[in-house]
Amino acid sequence: MSICDNGERMPGLRDIWRARQRIAGFVRKTPLIFSAELSRCLNASVYLKLEFMQDTGSFKLRGAANKILSLPPEQQKAGVATFSTGNHGLAVAYMAKSLGIPASVFISSRVPAAKVNNLKTLGVNVVIYGTSQDEAEENCYETAERDGLTVVKPFDDLYVIAGQGTIGLELLDECPSVNHVIVPLSGGGLAAGIAVALKSGMGDIRVTGVSMREGAGMHSSLRAGKPVALPEADTLADSLLGGIGLDNRYTFPLVRDYLDDTVLVSEEAIAAGMALLYREHRLVVEGAAAIGAAFLLEHGNVLPGRHVVLVVSGSNVDTDAFLAVLQNRS
Ligand SMILES: *Cc1c(COP(=O)(O)O)cnc(C)c1O
Image (cartoon, rainbow, N blue to C red; front, side):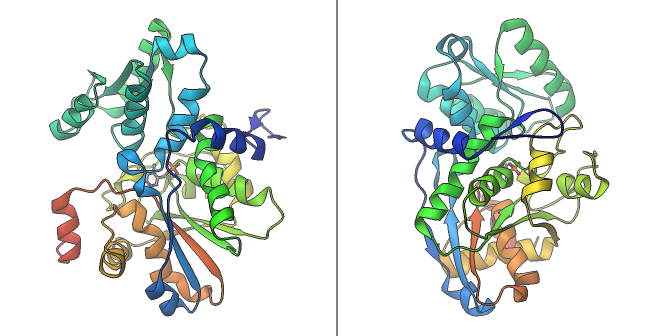
């Protein structure tokens, strides 16, 4: 257990082991497969950790499950809330439904009807407020305060980070020779959790965080030495959009202290990564999940001989958008 310079207790290996035990009934141990093609191209051993095979289509279920299951029963009964319409929102909604507790998702009037319907199908209370995600988020915190709901944050939470970190424990089991893990990086819950899990042991394992070139909030914050806000950009890796929070408590210091490097990749490389995962492995994944493959395609010649794992994080991609990428129309 460590205390950071901001006085916050940071998640450690013990929190991740506890998370593994807590979420076991809700979360799948995902397969790790060997990629012959990427290994051949890079003259390395490349494996894919298939995290999109969780229910709800992404690893976000691990963090949401750990957070919600750690709440005392009366707090669970009062209900949970979130302001994410993406993979995190789906994971919170799914967990709430599994446990039979109320969940509210706060969104703005700009969220497309298809996403709203998706959430409603999961049985959550959808609260539409304001015209921007920031307004919806503010409303979420105010309502939660008033009604005693617990806001489940998408990444900057000790339990969420520990939940994502359980991927690191699985990797050590499945591939003890691993010495480089490539992780998609947005708010940093995934990367921080995995890095803490892998680096608290004895092995010398590199962890690289990968983001898209435009709108990479964590990368820019690390450069600036403090959390900064960035304008959003159009990207195939839409699940990686969004800032890290100007009042970030956990993931900024953890990513800063535990990751070996953070790199940016082009949109063309992300598209090429998605196409490669489909062509070689018949995987249908979203842009964020292909960003590790994109990194190998753009920068992979720096890894000969290494045992590399790519975390393939999610599969929530629109069919039309996916076909456009395959047909090179994006
Ligand atoms: C949320 C998400 C990420 C990034 O996770 P962070 O913890 O925010 O860094 C990567 N891939 C997918 C598919 C996601 O949904």
